[in-house]
Image (tube, rainbow, N blue to C red; front, side, top):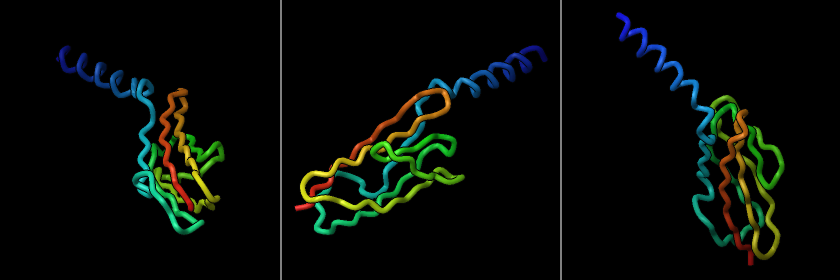
Length: 102
């Protein structure tokens, strides 16, 4: 019985230590760096629902499921899209995509 209580307490603390991990961040579109012929690009992805999400420093809404989408207007040349997810514990995950518009 004491072993079960100890396991339950240990499980609780392991669950609560999730603040040690940075938030999850996945970019679905564009899945990789690309060359685009169109100056409008739709980006989408998913992060932890409680993470603060930005694209090039501008806040993005990620909804209750953590999924997000945004329309981006590109300029000629190299465009850098930097996604940043930050959880309430200050842990950060960053991903970047490079888009070339000739």
